[in-house]
Length: 148
Image (cartoon, rainbow, N blue to C red; front, side, top):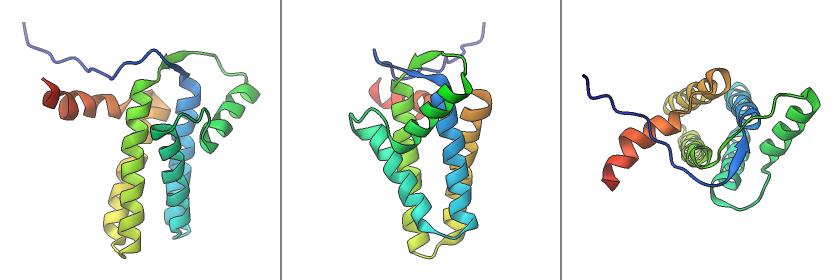
């Protein structure tokens, strides 16, 4: 039998709505795309601040989470709670990526910023469309080996 490595996510006792996290991902995609379309670093700064709130503070709702939560309620979407820890890890990755986009944009390295933005859009699209958490995959193969 093949030795198959299973995906391992960070775990916590806290739970969040899967629908809210998926709409957060959609809003993130829209903000990144808008930042490049309008050639404005302010979109990326806003998204970085939102990721920072979700990743590093105890504030219950970031601006995007508040909007997503309102949309879930307005659309009366099915409630399904999931573990919060992988989403915090993903928000930290999102923060690092948007901060990288800001720095690259300010340094006039537009192609590099666009590449990082495309990767962020791809990751967020996987979350929104297929509920695939790339953060869990990265955690399993990049972070976890350093703790073993």
